[in-house]
Length: 555
Image (cartoon, rainbow, N blue to C red; front, side):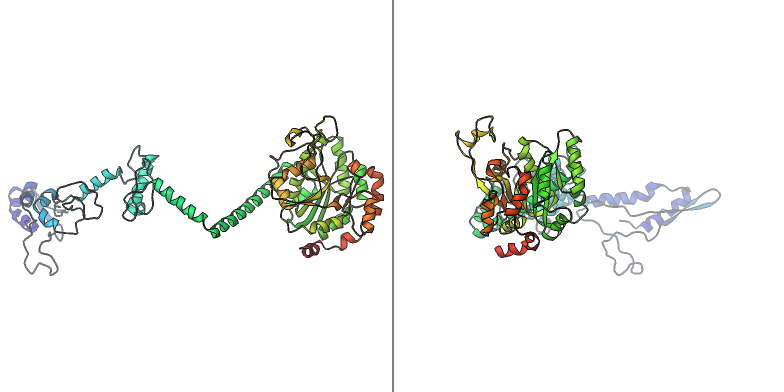
């Protein structure tokens, strides 16, 4: 190719002759040089310059570029103008089809060309997927186009594809394209939308989803045969179950607090104070018409005012009268309970409408509310016409404190009464088999206690637990399908004097005393003090007994 400076000097005479500068005169030598280069199999070299103008490090085959712009002088009528024109050497783009056609033998011998195909149709890049049978060199752009056509990937660009919105099948193709380029598609088996097998490391060219499922099943079968793995799985299942129960219990506690619009002082302070641990919570079931019964209990076995608060702080024993609301909101019955609450402060109001046929629902709501308010080891339900020795009750329950699911009471199995109009009639008698059958074993309703886990279970499942006509039968039915230890302790169902008195003199103090024929102490308002004096425990027993120490010694 001719020298740029030579061309400019060659045409300098024409500038002075025609006083104008023609573009054809400048580029004509290069057009001829371009045609010679196209016909020539190898690029032509520039002529060497003299040794004085050539750098020692320059190559003889390099294109020579002008060191600085040439100044083109234009001659006018009156003055000479100097125009600085920036210029550069033309760029030659090789014609690969012509070059490869004449030098195919040379390129075939080179192992560095990844797009050269062998005679057997396998390419040298290791994929072996090209279908061409000829021995010609495949240019890179053609090789890539064939590769994309076989892999059914329309494009590796996220800006191209069906709809150009990257949705659905088109998005999966872009995903597979990215994973293919990064190499992750060789490691992971990604099933295609049309069950197209994917590649994997090794000699396997394709693995479908069925084989992957079979491998996972084989691994599961091998795990089942390992006793250590089975024990680990059981341990994890129990841990997960415990955490789920705690989570649901916490949610239930929160919901119970937020649902009740009329709450007692216990609910008002529960969120503002740190939740402490209690030993047992005793709920005394009462009604609107039982004001005198409540007073008789306060005068005998239930501490009042400051002593009740001291009992909570020192011994962890919480005692409350449990009652709901009347069918007339804000009526005279509710106002009477509110006035009594201001005097004594020993009520637990439930979000429940009072009624004798609703005792099962009331019991369920009581346990759910008590769990949400107090974190205790045991939750006790007792009627307001039953005499209780609190210290003896505490020592009895302390012996079962390490049992996670325990149900303590006087277990019985009475007849299922199918005849209408009688007391304790069971409308769903047909569920218990033939007429004349008996109930399953359950604790009598005068007094029973359950552990924290069972109370939490009731709180979590209160919406789906079935209610029978009798609340003690309902409670027993809730635990039938559970792994619960039933404790039948006859000290929880002693008779009134002389029965409880003889047992106390023998050193076997009763936990609770009542008359079976009255389902409580007959005429309890008049007789509660008598029973307390004859069957009651020592006055200081409640304050001197260490229930935590008793529980450790029992274990």
